[in-house]
Length: 101
Image 1 (spheres, rainbow, N blue to C red):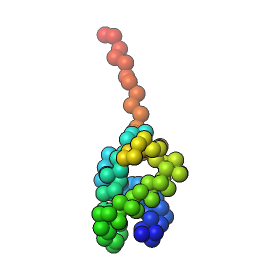
Image 2 (image 1 turned 180 degrees about the horizontal axis):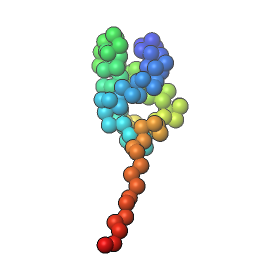
Image 3 (image 1 turned 90 degrees about the horizontal axis):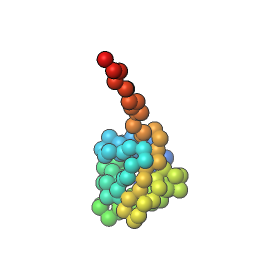
């Protein structure tokens, strides 16, 4: 399983963009472990590695720990993180005041 963890970490930007295409990933929003787990399984399958549910869960936990160390994930509890990835921030919307007629 070390190979699968390295595959994801070595392609971190691509992996995060892949997750964003599958799930709602927004800077400073919550992200849940089970979604991450399924994202890991799907990403690896798309890259030619089919994993059993349990094995993919171990890989997801290891990758999640690495992303926590890098500060991309901030742990909320055992099953969720806060995503700290400014590239996925929503565009700012400035309020336009209505002019009095």
